[in-house]
Length: 180
Image (cartoon, helix red, strand yellow):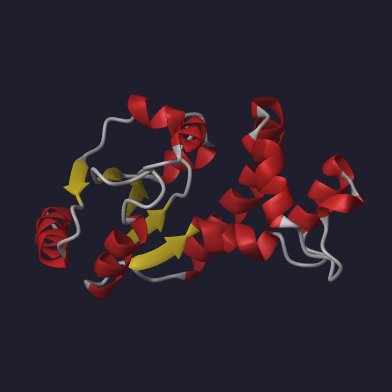
C-alpha cells in the first residue's frame, strides 16, 4: 500500500489535490473529518477535552466548542501541544482502522497540520506539498500551526495558482509515478 500525505498551509488547495487523487483511484482520508467525529457528543476526544480544558469547552449539545478550543490553543503553544497529545493518538487509531478495512493500494491522507514528530508520519510513503502565493494573506499567526513544514522534504510539490487544469496535470504525473 502506498500512502501519500498531502500537506500545506491553510487555504492552499490540499482538499482540491486530494479530491483529484480520489477521482484517479486513490482512497481519500481527511484527518479534519476524523477530528470532527472525535469532537462529537460523548466521543473519546470530547471526553479528553472536557477532562483537561473543562466543561465550558463543550457546546450545549455536548460536542466540543471548536471555535473556543481553537482560540485557546491558537494563543498558547503549550495547550496546543497538550491537545495534540490527546487527539493525535486517537486520530492515528482511526486512520489505522480505516487502512485495515480498505482494499485500495493507493491512499491519500489530507493532513491539516503537519508535525514532524507526529506518529502518523510513519505511515506516509510519499509527501505532497501544496503551495500557492495567495495562501495565508492576513493570517500570519497561523504559521505557528505549520512551522514544522519548513523541515519537510516533499517528494512532490504542487503549485496551486488557481488553475484547475494545472493541478490536474500535476496530479497526472503523481499518479503515473505512483504506479511505478
